[in-house]
Every structure is written in C-alpha cells, then in structure tokens.
Image 1 (cartoon, one colour):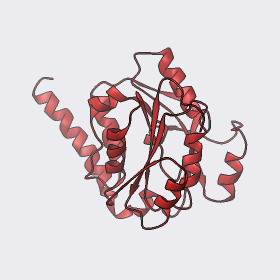
Image 2 (cartoon, helix red, strand yellow):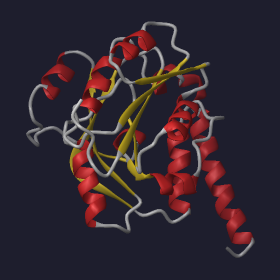
Image 3 (cartoon, helix red, strand yellow):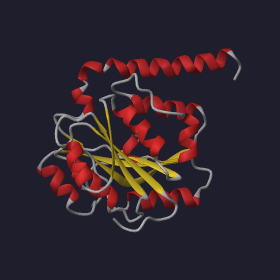
Length: 234
C-alpha cells in the first residue's frame, strides 16, 4: 500500500460470499494513486472464504451477522477515520486513479459534498479480464454511475444525511441518495470511468430478485417525505 495521502480517505468494502472477487477489490483500493488511510472490509456473515482471504490481505476486517449491505456500510462509516468516505462492493474494481480524480474535483469546488463518476459494466470472464488489462480507450459505452461504488463524499455530509436504511434488501443506496438530494446536498458526476462493475450470477440484485418490490417501496418513501414537507410548509 502506498503512503496515505491528504486529504485522508477511508474505503469501506462490504462483502458477502465473494471469495472469488474480494482480493481483486481490495487490491484496487490499496493501489490507488491517492492512497487511502485505511481499507475496512465489512464481512456480512459470509459462509465461504471471503473473511479468510480479506484478513490475509492485511486490511482492517470486521465481521458481523448477515444483515445486508446497508448495515455493513453503516458499520464501516461508524469506524472510519477519514475526512472523505468511499464505498466499494467486493465484486467490483476501481481504476487506480479513481480517488485522486475525485479528490481533485472536491478540492476545486469546496461547495461540493460528493462526487460520482461513470461505470463500465462487464460480464465475468474474458470480457472483464480484457477490459481491466488496458487503459480505457473510450470505445466502450459508459453509464453515469449514481451508485455507492463511484461515490466519494465528505464525512460531515454523509453524517448529515444519516445511515443507509437496513430494511431494504435492494435499493438502499437509491433511498439514501434520494434523502441526500432532498436535503440539498451538492454533487457532480465526472465523465471519467471510475468503476468496473462485474456482472455475475450472484450479484446482489440477482440474488435478491424476490425483493425487487423494495424499489417501489423506496420510491414511495421518498414521495411520502416530499408530501410531508409540503404539508408543513418546509
């Protein structure tokens, strides 16, 4: 791991049964050109070798009873020491410049609370290996990534919004981001590729397919908050 850089960044990696991918995610966090002051792996009750592999990498590891990604991220944020917070899913990967470009953006615009970037979605196997083996050449389609894995946020801004809701099996970041927008947090999305998202059979959205109705509940909760604010004149 490179010497930690200023401003200090804490990286949290929630992990559940990701033994095939966790080492690569950790490596991409440790090798950042803007080195984090810490990488915390939050093992969410894995039943495979995820925790064993993470411990072998030398990063800070915390284990909890399986409670979902939201609960794992919350615990990581509570433990984090950095002024800036970043979250990386255990089956995804960052380009080496991810944190440095976002830190630069926050430095240029002190009124920003958080910075996002673009995502390239890749299927596990040859497509993944070929894409990450070389610099992004601009030929593959990128998507604006308003997801936890591309976000870098000031710690005080995260605390203003509060924790991720833990009642959702999916959609917990959509709910959190909606609350952040409703509170007036300022953000931007860089045009840069900042996250490789791996598509595989055990992605959370696929694993929790039966809980897809949570997305509708998340949207309803936001609409209810807006109605409540409108009725009290705020």
